[in-house]
Image (cartoon, rainbow, N blue to C red):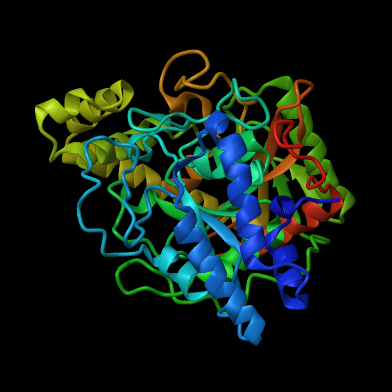
Length: 463
């Protein structure tokens, strides 16, 4: 029998509707799993049972009256600790932030969760200021992968992905400015979507500028679509927020028949582990079996890593510009290095990188006039040793070639689980669509999920 903590949000809502389950007992089950397993995984930096149970009790009363507050009433959700939560600290993995200050605001996405009755289960770990593709920080320590605790869950939303994978809440909010929901989704065996830039409002504005997206991280594609319907409402605090979607994301057809799909095994420049390559190729073949017209083709751009690093490292320098020398000395050493590099870039360097970014966006716009979707591996490698920035030295951008290009272009891009290596580590397939085609990406991932379901397999740690 499936444990309560392993049910999807959609399944929980159905059980609440019939009275089979109560939000209180579900929240208690999730909190108990966190109590048992999080000391080893370290997915959460803040768990407040009274906060969670108070919300669950209020939800149970609404369901008893037959008056649920919204689309997620009573569903446990975790929040990455870079998103503001009113009355609770948001420390971003850094000792440089005062936890005792007034925390008066919710981020737009967090406010929408409250409006729809979701149960906040806690804040999830992130590297310091969410700066890299793994999850460890001077404040929180090392976060580990539930499939193999000696490995990283990825990052920077690694706490969120580890929580969802381990059944410590079916829904999580993460952020992604270079792959930070897709990297950990691939390493942790869950689903994640980086929506079109501006689709989910973001406040305060990220120092990484228009690279940074808020995104859902979930156990199922259906749950992600439901979460998108909650958090995509307009918020005037975000000057670049898009208007509300014209139609709900939930309830997609899951049909890819007739779609023109490009499959690029390397984007023309990446090196990929053979096991990962085989799993991604098999996933692309599944799209063909579902009736899509799949063609192996590269989009035709060179690796934009140098331009991305100018934009990213300059943003990191902006993050810490107000710190004292003493505070800087206590930063994550890798962060300190990239901030020093970012501070050396000139305005001309930044504008040159921006021009390259605009050209990349133009190229991908033309590419999607011919192809509805682009498929790639999400990651070129499986999860590696926890506590390291890279498996073989160098910066995190050296092993994430498939993710950061699509932050530069602001396109929707998802990671959907597509199998396991011989060592039992998850792999992900990236599904990329043209700007504003979030519904099409979700629909394609739903079709793949139905053809290749992964939900019956939980990490050995919690099975």
